[in-house]
Image 1 (cartoon, rainbow, N blue to C red):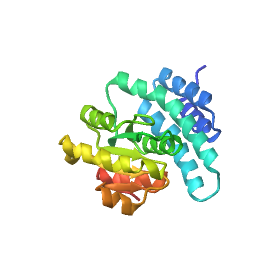
Image 2 (cartoon, one colour):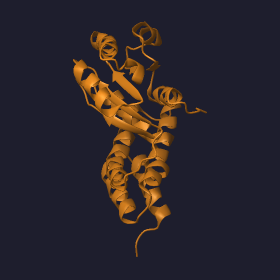
Image 3 (cartoon, rainbow, N blue to C red):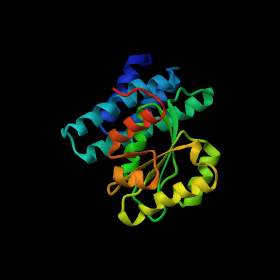
Length: 220
């Protein structure tokens, strides 16, 4: 006898709470096989648990390593569910978020957490990875037409690339077509204003709230 829908959803939550990517994939496959709406499985299962973990981190109840592990578990299950959503030809996303770490910077930790939490908040997230050249950001904005472009820089030496990318978007006639959010440990709201970004994500929770505001969603 197969598992019931609620049991599978709870299994997805447990996988994130227990930081277990293999369990997340297994329950995501079970959700697909059982005909559970993949958007529901993503939202009520994986995303729900990651928001819980994110809140605990925000309250100082868990460590960064635990938040990272939970985000990795969610991403593992989400990959399976996203394929199912694409197969069905529909996706109820609040917006499309293109994210990457700028050229010269190979840090992925903060960006990975932000990407997972954006996914948990209902965004379609396209992650370009690390050490992404300016021209690739411009090319991908043209290709994917995201609502928001997220530029991560974890070193003071690479922050200037955020300005360079915004200027390149202007030169390509794309700046008015996309909101730009900058983030990373050394990045401040003053810097964001100076370079003409639309928002600065001070941490993962802040980035999600500001992203929702940028696409016109109410934030509690």
